[in-house]
Length: 237
Image 1 (cartoon, rainbow, N blue to C red):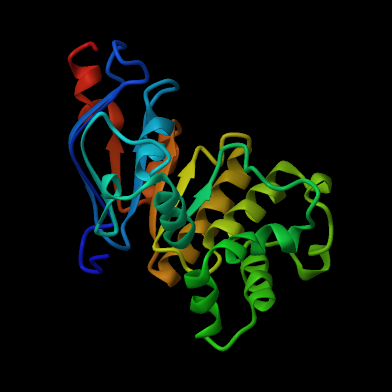
Image 2: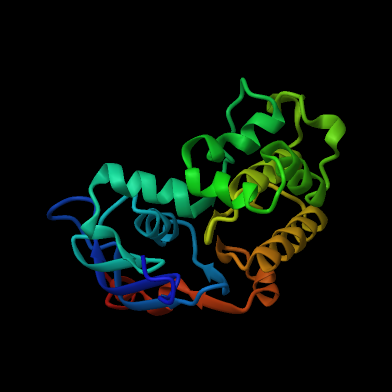
């Protein structure tokens, strides 16, 4: 993996769901630098989640190249893409995808069960995995007294912060957030985003944050309108 490469480098990408179906994404070029915090805006159905799945290696494009942290994803098998994602990428999903039968602390620690690199990142700092999980949760305004509570007892805002801590633990180089604030009111949305950006800055983590809410954009280094770079939209495809 090239440690000097951009966090995300997309060239001449096209993607469609069915062989003869309409092209959903046609991206001539998209670059995101290391440590950059980027806001991607797009309407519902514009291909935002599809783009994130391509960057995460869940999907592969029909043509073009997607490189993440200097690694061309097409060069990896499906199993190796899964392993790469576990080691280097943290996801915050719109519906959070927490494990309902696990308490808060075990949900946060879950990535460390699948990623040796993320475990070692914590251990090299001379702290335990549990201590790092507690630090993240407290940084995100979830007190240590809640650690053993099942996630099913949490509010939407609390679940969101658990999902963010899970994505951030072990210092992944890239965090991808797919509409994680859509269920929150304005005050909670602003507070959560402020904490997320602060944690990413401290870990020099690249953040790709997708939302339809343009009010959040000024807090990021750069904003991208997906419709402006997606030729499939521009050509009416």
